[in-house]
Length: 437
Image (tube, rainbow, N blue to C red):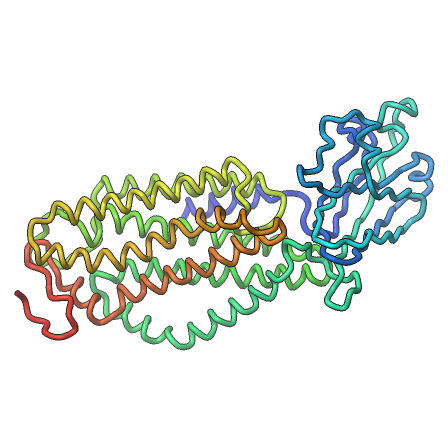
């Protein structure tokens, strides 16, 4: 309980200060001079004509400082303005809004393809001109960024990268609700019966419940975001926290599964069925993997400035997470190969092959779906990559959970595994006779 509370506290402390695309803050002349233009935000406009609304708290001060809001479209090689001098950098802006009124409405030029635009603030002091910056020179602002909706009106808060995720989470919650209504009673009966698979069913059900809660929190956050461009940031943070706990729970279960549980080679008493192996080696490996993934997830969320459960993996932490999942998949393959290749009994080997087929399918899909989808997303346009990774990972992990539930709840496999001991020969895998060889 204490590690969970510590993780939650650490995660909430990592929440960035700016959320959504209704951006509020302060225009600072000293920051603009230091950065050759103060970075405000970045937004991907969709096809059509977007809109920028900028509201100021002190319009006379903005006029005195000759304040401007500059927009730079992303080119094929990025924004490519970092190595330019101050004047050259500011001259690259394709849209300039001179801030002299309390509210400015500016249309974005018509776009034929989704394009990311970066907003910078500059004034008369930015390039070292204008003398000493006055002490009272900061300006409070609110910027609203809109994409065209289906009717072409600039009323959509979502960027091109996020369009459609709100509807996806709505359908996902509906699917979770229907599935829970159908399967909650059989699952509850299986948990009440106990048996050697009770622990894994509890972990699996907990991870699935956390994923459902994460989807609900994401939907609530995005539903509010669709109205005001801000959403409920704490809901987005809790959604990512639930997803993170679900990920580490599944990781612990799958590592325990592949390093010592179910396919364990250790000798157990004849009277005891095959159960979770809690050897020091398996515990150390599982806890080490959980701690590593938890630390990398916290690191990745700290580096990100937006709320997303799955990212494009451009950060070092994201790349390390992908590497960890690939290593764990290779570990699982190695363990399964060792167990099967060293088994002398043909009957047991056949059983392990059939059993390992279901285990490996669920585990490999869980471990490898994220790295594979990140790799495949390269062939898509930039505004589609995040949606491909997010939706693909959620669906693939749902398939993985279904496979694992089928393994542990189906009549044939569940009955055979719960009846198998490490001394006796395995039972037949056929649906026919249940007798021993």
